[in-house]
Image (cartoon, rainbow over all chains, first blue to last red; front, side, top):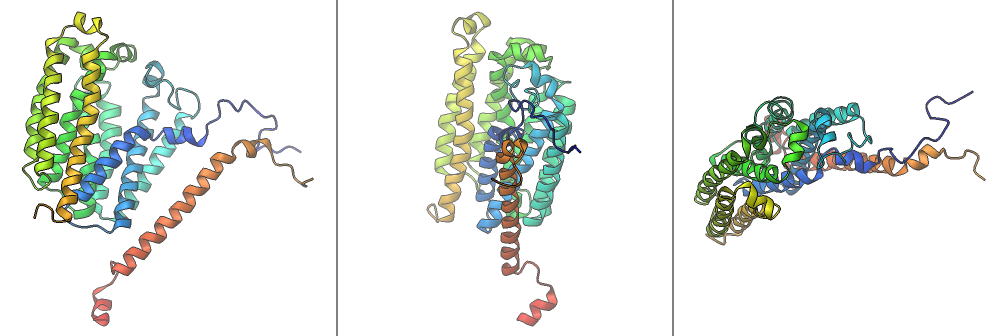
Amino acid sequence: MTDTSIPSQPYSAANEAGFGDYFALLKPRVMTLVVFTAFVGLLAAPTPIHPFVGFCAILFIAIGGGASGALNMWWDADIDAVMKRTRRRPIPAGKVTGQDAFGIGIALSAFSVVFLGLATNWVAAGLLAFTIFFYVVIYTMWLKRWTPQNIVIGGAAGAFPPMIGWAAATGGVSIESVLMFCLTFMWTPPHFWALALFMRKDYDNADVPMLTVTHGRRATRIHILAYTVLLAVLAVAAGFTSIGGPIYIATSVVLNAMFLRGAVQIWRRDEDMSEADNFLVERKFFKLSLLYLFAHFGAILIEAGFDKFGVWA
Amino acid sequence: MSLSKQHELHERRFGRNLAVGVILVGLIAIVFGLTVVKVTRGDYETPATQSVTQ
């Protein structure tokens, strides 16, 4: 008699998925941004929230973001396999099957939306459900392979978390939460296009219509500058609403000046100049973009803390 | 000597199973914690029970 549920011969354990591989499906690095911005949205809201409910809200938003990451990996496994940056992800690496990723993604999506609704309110849960739908269906399945504006519109998915955090506390949407959404939304294109400038071969090989591939690198440089100018106006303007204050405005003015300088440098350069120094300016701009977003949301967080303790009152 | 030798598969997947166990215990703690917060805060009180407690 044999036990059919367990293989009688030990097979190669080297390629078997560990817990870390399943966790990697949730895109932990993206989740960091989701957690941080949702946390800022939650704390910046004028309505106080019970600390444990707030913790649970952030957790469910993070799980929802992770679930959409798993569904993205399920759908994009073919692209991930040919791109240097993504070929070690669990599905192309052969650690996790696409079906498993799909199952995990769907299950965690439903879990996170229902639990966020039960823990906080159904406006926040509805926004989370829409975010997952937007990222998976609108961005991953539709726009990413169809239009060079994929990054622009797809960036909305990554911009929702502070709005969800705000809605979890207040039960609604307001101008401040929309401005926090716009901040990430407008930041995404220059951030990703800078990356695409020095990772072009990856997108070429994957046949993804990035702006660098479809409209050329000159057009991409112009687009980066245009979006950076719009972002600067919006980011500084947010400082004059209730989420802003002296610290936010000071941070925003300095960072936007640096970001604009970087965008102008990128716009002035041509391919020969960039290749001569291995895209030094583009790489610096990309790194600065990471600091830019964290510093802006960090400043909103500090302002919210000061408001709560009545420092500016 | 133990009566039933642990299968190699179980040894290999111990870490994975342990992590799933920890997640399930965490889920129980979260549901319990949320219940405590919501009940003590009076989220589930109906108008009738509110008038009685007043």
